Amino acid sequence: MGSKSVEDLLEAATGVHFSGFHMNDLEARNSRVEQPTTSTDASTHTQPFVIGVAGGAASGKTTVCDMIIEQLHDQRVVLVNQDSFYHNLTEEEIMHAHEYNFDHPDAFDTEQLLCCMEKLKHGQAVDIPHYDFRSYKNYVMPKRKVNPSDVIILEGILAFHDPRVRELMNMKIFVDTDADVRLARRIRRDTVEKGRDIRSVLDQYSNFVKPAFDDFILPTKKYADIIIPRGGDNHVAIDLIVQHIRTKLGQHDLCKIYPNLYVIQSTFQIRGMHTLIRDAKTTKHDFVFYSDRLIRLVVEHGLGHLPFTEKQVITPTGSVYTGVDFCKRLCGVSVIRSGESMENALRACCKGIKIGKILIHREGDNGQQLIYEKLPTDISDRHVLLLDPVLGTGNSAVQAISLLIRKGVPESNIIFLNLISAPQGVHVVCKAFPRIKIGQLADKKCNFYPRHT
Image 1: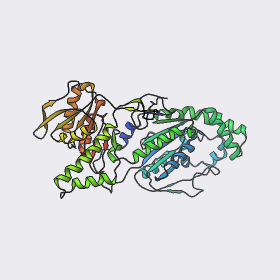
Image 2: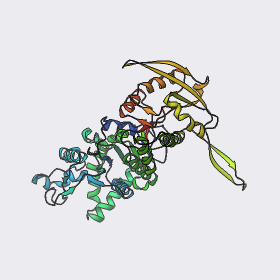
Image 3: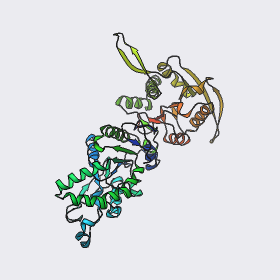
Image 4: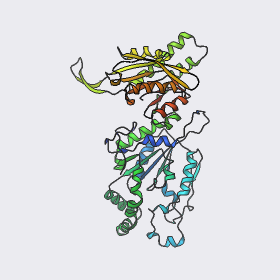
């Protein structure tokens, strides 16, 4: 139903089928939810990760939500059910409740739902109504107090129907279960749990449930980022969804703006080295030593994102080991002069690697002029590691990357390595080259390194 497939939840869409679930450019959708910001003040409210789970009645939505919540046990997660926001029925409607269409969009108080979701997303506690299906009222039972959380899951058959509600979501999941399976589950549930006879269940299904699914629920499938066939039985899809959520929760705010921005998880070792190189009292010798260590980490991590091929080798014991073969067509390009400080780390990681040079001369406050370049003649056939430890305004980086592209290097073949980056530079480079992938090194205030361009 119009949803593109992906091979990996953490990467952009590739158009191949994988593990029975699909993803429709999830990262690009996330980038529209968050607004650009350069502020990292600790007092700034951290936006929660909002997940919408839609699908037909008895498709397994609740099971999917329960599995996600169970695996995110170390995160604050709150579940909001669309069923809590049914309109109160009038006395006349109650008398003919068996003829009331609870699967129609008009059956829900979407304005109240939207108000509650807006407040939760902005860090405010809300009182969620508890709809009583015996009295068809939402004030008979006490309301449920819900506090702000790291993850908010909105579950309901028409969770994607209203565009205002959809815009609040960072991830949209559609649980796609066969109609016969859904009907069988509904018959079992209504006859056993609600004491209804099969005839009334089938009449309601034919008159309301199936037409509402075809007219209102199924069309919202096109808005889904991820489509999960078989619902809770699809453990592979659930595991990958949880992995993706964990990745997004651990990312810097800029990662939520740019889907190509990734985080190198911080450790006390990395923070300690950052502390030393930022300390005005640190000696020159120690500054060079610890900067080299950090640069080596950046280079190693960047190399981990080069393409690879599978390779089998025979071990000394005679057994077969299936591993990977390094990318052979590779070169480095340093932006003179600061980029040269990263060359030793690259040479230590890549034996005999060719390294080209780019010198960019700044003229005035606005203009920049390239005055020197010495690059391998076959650079267009290579993957390029562009070296510049400091990404400031981003103007020099844009000019260097533009030069490589003019030399025939595909944008996807460039890995741009930085030690320290300013948010302004990240904005400039990512906007000029939307396919660039940037990862945060360690310091959550301003240090990033761009990876693939």
